[in-house]
Length: 140
Image 1 (tube, helix red, strand yellow):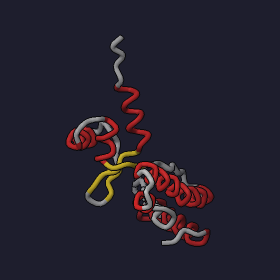
Image 2 (cartoon, one colour; image 1 turned 90 degrees about the vertical axis):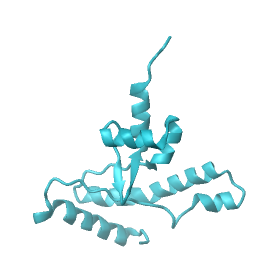
Image 3 (cartoon, rainbow, N blue to C red; image 1 turned 120 degrees about the vertical axis):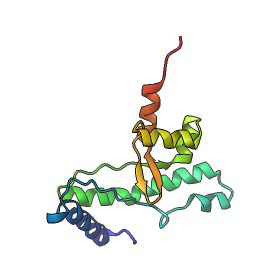
Image 4 (tube, rainbow, N blue to C red; image 1 turned 45 degrees about the vertical axis):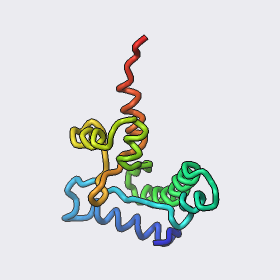
C-alpha cells in the first residue's frame, strides 16, 4: 500500500478499530510493521557499488519516513504509539556476537523482547542495546 495522507489515516483508523472496538477489546497490543521498499532498498545501492551496510541504513531511514506519518495519524486518534526499529535474529546474533540459537533461547526465556512476524521474530533494536548495557560486567 502506498503511504499517502489518506491511506495513512485509513490504516490508522483500522488499527484503532481492531485494538479498541467492542468485541475486539481484549487488552491485545497491535504491531503494525512498516517497510520502505517504495522509497529505497539497500540492495539497490549495493548493486550500484555502495557498501551494503550503508544501503541498509538508508533503507532503515526510509522506513522511518513511512512510519512517522502513521504514528502521527494514530496519535491524532488518541492511540499511544511507539515507533521502533526491529531487527532480525541473525542481525541480533551478529551485534551480540552469539549464535542465532542463543538469541532464540533468550527470546523464548523472556530475556529479550521480540515481536513475532509470521514464523520469524524481530527484536526491537533499542532492546538489544539495553540488554547489552545491563549485562556488561566491568572486570577492571
